[in-house]
Image 1 (cartoon, helix red, strand yellow):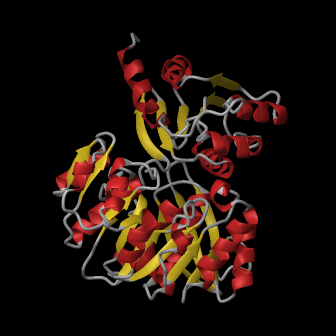
Image 2 (image 1 turned 135 degrees about the vertical axis):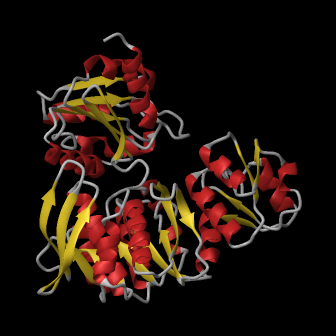
Length: 449
């Protein structure tokens, strides 16, 4: 496994080992993912070297690994198969009945909820999701007893078209990863292929106009959402600071009231998606609903990161405009003194494409802190900085309270100086902002009262 420490490859490696395959690999640096595989018995080297291949029979590579990587070059020269992440995942999927969860937002949370719901129904599911489930500290499980395999079906590199899922979920469709697809129309067509290729059930969100349109084009889909024409309707929603409550209704029948231990209408929709497909797969509704009452969340999805001196810290992976809006909307039920939203733009290509779309994303924040772009390995682009998002926000909301800090290293000290009792400090982004909550609490803890 070349790039074994990455979230996707790490989960695949863990499943391969659970299946009985000896696994080795390499990565550029030590990480929690590398250490996890080592703890399972894998040999993971730091640094790439042709000698790392040893006598392995199959090489699989992370999407981030370039063609000129020394291990990839050596593997091809030796005539050994080199598989992409999507290809190795597709081969694992052939071993069980695969349930693929796709969509621009909510894949990780929905697939995690689905795995838990199916466990509650005693189906013994296996799963690979894109984040660590807080219940078990891992995003991958291979259960030899069950026949269902829940997979987060990632569209970013076309993986979702490779896995040949039997049952599928589409949470929503928005313009993202256009560097791969070329156009929004091509992206939508890919989702149509994903849905139409599945035998069923095919579950789609009725509240998302593009997803609903694709469902109508493909036909034979089951829908969920708050929409009156949804097959599984979300009703009686009640939002709280740290939780949500709703009832799932099929036709005129209430299937049960779900007490969800995480906030936000977006998470209510995620839960409804998981419940819908679980029930359509034969799960008992109340067993699935009860299971979601024990959902402890996924790392970096509205993750509680501490409370100190009256300030609560929460971290979230939100990095697209609608994701930021959804997470901030979820804070309204909390009745915080202030919501201080800290956002780090992710990738220069994505910022160049979407910066204008952030203009209304922060309306539920009392104070906004914007940082420079986290490149995620991309080279910097002239003129593409976090100031573009600052401009979009202030053009639309001239009196918004915003601070721009171009350097990530400036953020902890600034937050330490402005936070006060009653505040929610919400960090958002897919980059390295996740440790800011810990850094601020360390600074404030060591400061004189």
